[in-house]
Image (cartoon, rainbow, N blue to C red):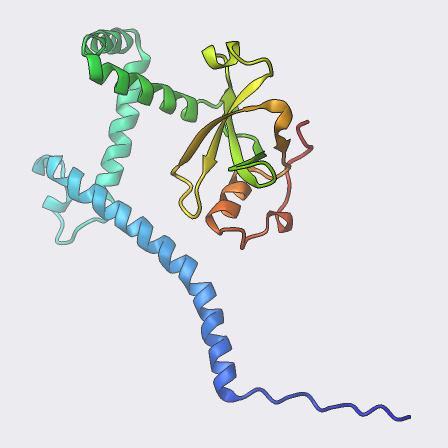
Length: 222
């Protein structure tokens, strides 16, 4: 019996234009959004920092055009100078004096102390906070969510628990900057091979970006 081969269906011009449009949208959207966010950030910093620069030190005073990112460059230079001054003995003594003053203010000292600890943890290269991605059962047993290990718990919470407890940050989708602080037994977690960047992409994309298509970390933490 001779098999009848059907000719391939002809794609209409309108269908081709639609496919081209969607392909262009996929390619252009990430680039455009990234450029927009970067430009918005530079403009925001410039609008708030440029007025603080004296006219004598502002290059735009002598140039017939504006310099995008001048405020951002000024902030970077200021932070470098501040870090250099704080690194010496006089700077550290001045910093301790300022912290003593802040420590006398009931509400401000709590805010300052918490923010300082967070930034020191994030900037420090020796600590391994948010280096592990795990699965945790949330919001009920049988459902799993991606979370990031923010550190081992050494507080009163650990003292009152029988099992080893770890601190978890469970981000929300699609905004990973908000989320929940969880305390979970280490034995109940499933450590994943994916990196924190891959885990963040998984959360932001609501599962559309598959981390299995990306390179994994070397080895898995048990």
